[in-house]
Length: 508
Figure: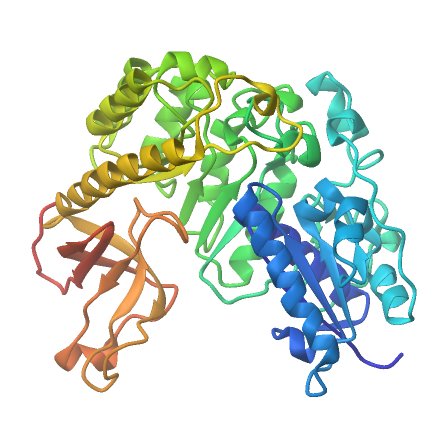
């Protein structure tokens, strides 16, 4: 067949990045050539985000922009296809509203994506995905889900082809897509970063009133530990030094495997994978932070003491309306337990302000928590109605201008608190994973490098800039190296550090 090219454009969270790399692996195995630029591709596949209004708008804007390439005589692009959460959530509605997209395909199309794209290039318009509540695809009982998984629901980012006993049925995957022996990972890396997200579960069983994710991502389902470990080994072979465990709710990992302590058992095994220097966990529920898990995350070499805790608010009254648990005092106690074990542990969270019924006293309680917790990073989001959620039907909605005022008020407080938290790290010794060389500066005079310390998660938690100058320029560390350095300054949540030479001293 003539060469066919495809570009994958990924929007949204790290879970979507895993899904895109699975699609890339499937498409390359199907004979497609992957290219970086949509203008160089026969088909541009946009992996959309459907979480909140701003993310939906970004996804539609990218789809529209990609569609203009079809009329550009300098571009190769013949078709634009929407996949991902927005396509899954809205399906036919999105297709009707966006005729510029040549196809809108849901998760069920992922296993057959190569044929779907061939049909699009042949001039066909595949039937658009019809949305459904994906929670209904798996049994209500978590213990019954593993047997049904893979037979009744497509689970993006979960697929591993087991070579035995059905080796003859395994696809002939190109070099770089899967290990030569053992379980074959259906994934193709789309970047050369020294870290990579690794999906440990999909879906969610929580019923937060503001969140629509369970309806289009489905019920909670853990990946078997052997599959997670196989993918971690493959990532290490690809040059990855830090794996970032992602899911909708990592603290629930294993409940459908009959082992609520499965994550505690898995983390040391991942940290022992040859080539992996760091294992970082994301999406932790405060109400599910068991003492044993806290001990493993703070006491296992190679497991990063990093806590991405989904607090969302601190007022018990607001949290109950969100259908969540806890409050300011319980959350402060949890933060205290983390820092009792590791004083410089990284702790981050997101909060929602302006939720229906939120009072000034509730906002003050949230401020009390943030001031007392001194988190490293906090994302502040204003409440907005999400289609199909319980909160959409709640009364006592706040005016948009009042929500904006509260967002501004909390954002100002958070910026002060997180900047002070970063400033307190000046003089500390940190271990920085080098990710890339700084774009600015004269490379003959300096070799400033950008990476992340242990308390900094990927993309949204700030960076650490390593100042390398003078005679050290020629021997600057390479991307993927872990460098011990002393923090010399803070710029907001970002740090500036000086790599240590033998004999250098710093505050540990």
